[in-house]
Amino acid sequence: MKHSQESRSSLALRYGEHRIRCAVRRSDSRTKGSISIHIEPSGRVLIDAPALASDSEIRLAAMRRVTWIYKRLSEIEDRLRLATTREYVSGETIYYLGRRYRLKVIGESNARSVRIRGGYIEVSTVDSSPASVKKALHDWYRNRARSVLADRLAEVSKQLRWVKVMPPVSFRAMKVQWGSCSPRGRITLNPDLVRAPKQCIDYVLTHELCHLKEHNHGARFYRLLDMHLPGWRRIKIRLDDMADAILAT
Image 1 (tube, rainbow, N blue to C red):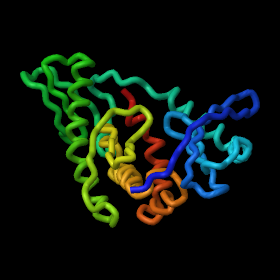
Image 2: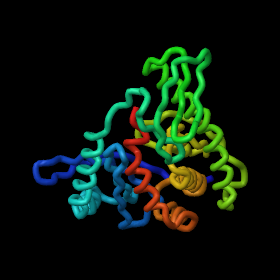
Image 3: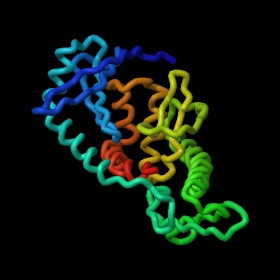
């Protein structure tokens, strides 16, 4: 499998009194003049550019969209300001497969367990402290992720002709990524993805499986993603908008 070469740097943009720092990722797989800008749920600004693009070309492309970048960062900042830290007590809202549930802590059990019952996710534990409830819930999410995400990965991969053998998969908690694909074809998934709607899960899995064929974010990669998941941009926006609520800890 042939992989493109990438290099990374950074630049800072000025918007009025504001200074916006951007990460720049150059790749030899991108065609001349093809510069795209992504803003991650964490507020990180990432610019993908051709390997031979000059700093001035990249800065000019970014400045043309600096108003959009600033507005998007302001929206993210507002959401982060309103986000609350979970207390892991009964009545809190938590997510599983995109559905909102109420947390119910039961402190009268001899064994720790987690189950869905109606509109509740019940955590039974002798120790009902927030730390104990948090651990029980996170262990349950990880176990469900191994099952649910493996099933969805197998289903999604059936539609992609270049996936002849299921790639190795691992799970790791990540703050700003839902998934990644290594140059050797190992897919790493954030177990918290199991809290998102199935449509969003399938988008992330399709994205990573496309990297098995195009291990970059060049034009060919996005053509591949457009071909196999035409509505991915709308789904990505939905996932990004839910990220703060889903990942609140």
